[in-house]
Image (cartoon, rainbow, N blue to C red; front, top):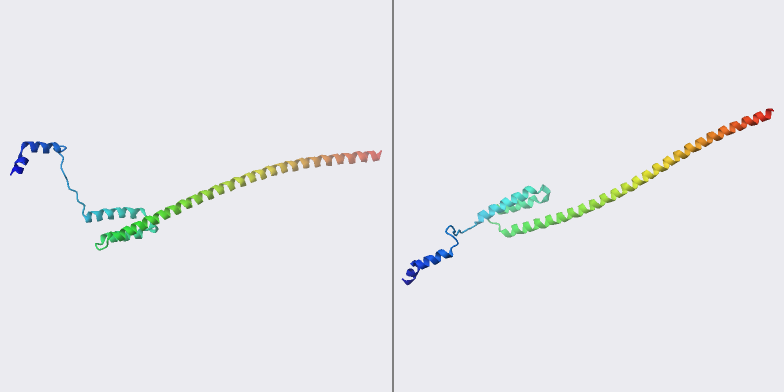
Length: 162
């Protein structure tokens, strides 16, 4: 009886009001059911499946979805499958990274080889141009010498006649 009297007292009511942060504050109990969690997991798996191409492990994601729909399968198998899928994706990512590095190195080597060949081609074009100039000069000198020989033959023939 004394306890009820203390609880009904105005001082107790004032103390209780002071402990609450505001008049609009209330307590809400949240509870997630297993079916809601299953639905959320299924939605996440559907999203993941949409992002994967057929060769990237869609079968595993489908199997996990199937296991979620079944009520008798525990989450241990699902977690194991998800861990295996994550490990496979990590391995594929590292393989892709290594392949990208290899391709970049091959591109660099090909560019270097192309520059080297272009320099050689330019050098050969210069040599060809110089050789053509040399041939032209030699042709002119031969023509001049032939003209000189004809003139000499003519002067010898005139000297012989006298």
